[in-house]
Length: 148
Image (tube, rainbow, N blue to C red; front, side):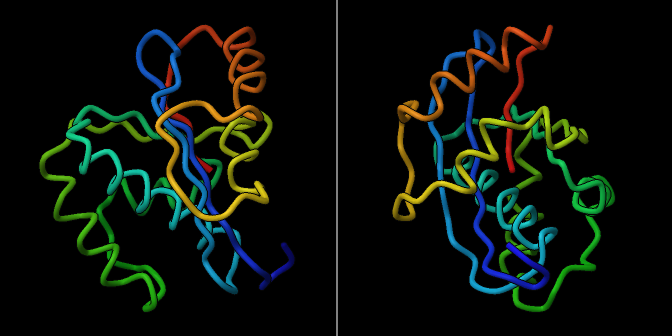
């Protein structure tokens, strides 16, 4: 919130049948919006790797972060450099698609990022996510993994 302000990241993992496989929320201290999006992508890739989910479609509402990931660039803030380098290393194991989505299409992830819960990983859809995912799926013709 604000620029810079307190940042948090969240994401929702879905399978090919739109079933929620998990969601997460993580705080990132003070930073900018693109840093929250970077933190979400780093966290999502790490969580997916830990669970051996090696086929991943990431949607982000930050075009800058999408371009960073597409190019495998190391042009990230220094405080994220070690995490980012580790993320780039484990990406070698993945089949990855990364696309840009407007914030309005990223509601489930936005809910997780702005969630007041403590930081964590939930291997199911928390209550706030169930309705958002149903709404999202009724307005989109394809299934995807959403991050924000």
